[in-house]
Picture 1 (tube, rainbow, N blue to C red):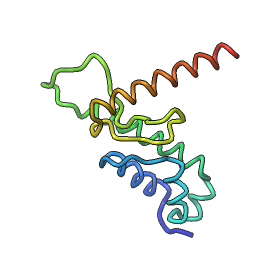
Picture 2: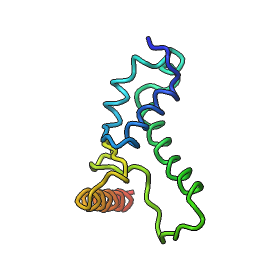
Picture 3: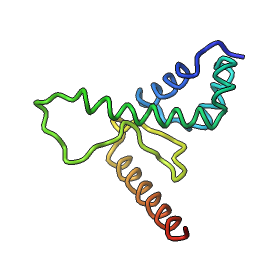
Length: 124
């Protein structure tokens, strides 16, 4: 059993993404499981850790937007701090590290995710 708080482990995993490393969320949760203290393991489970990674990555975008310099021209859209590089959304990559080809791949992944979501919605 580990000695780190659950939130600290999640912060380190998301920090890896922001630092420019691509991660598989589920694999990162499994790899770091033994670092989490017993209370955190009891509360979260692997799926809970993956969910917290998602939440922390989304929160980074909100924080970045609030910290943006008012003098900087505002874009008519918002970019997330990290984007999925596979259909399942398991592999995250920091947006700022993407090349043009990486952006094109991320856009195509998002289009496919939206198409799958629309198909599932029609089935409901």
